[in-house]
Length: 223
Image (cartoon, rainbow, N blue to C red; front, side, top):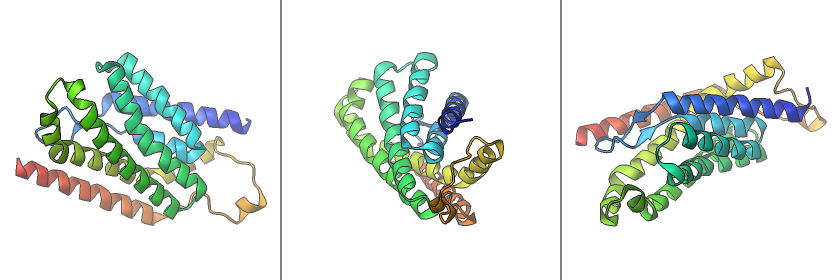
């Protein structure tokens, strides 16, 4: 199977899994704002970007968000734009940086960049568009920025980073075993650890998940 076709197959498979995860897993994170729900599609989308490239990650984001709009979402074009912006600003920077530096450090830097960029852009989006989207005064949304939108987006992105660090290597190995991830070897590849993920990635991922869980616990206690 040619490399291009293998990349298309991997992209399609992970996009399908991302869609299924989005449909069946929705978890409220912020007490007092039950409409802000975590769903893990971005984990599978960023893994697509890590495995086969940032362009494929970009395409996966668009496909999954479009499918979400026409099947299960009731938020229309504004919701579509919100989902695309949120996912793209997490997935694309992470995948781009990782493909420049395919090591665990590169993955961590990329994912951290995704966390920061997604959180920042969604704060701006919430300030500008959410009053129109929710049909509420801007002052209401401004009051929710530090208490609901900021913690939600930061925790959501950090959970995505943590789960990616935990499951990326097993998924990468699975695709390698099936032959879908087979690459043309070069002399440079022979001396380069492209995956770069060690048990430290799992430990870091677990610590990040624990931190997010503790933050959610503290928010629940403050309500």
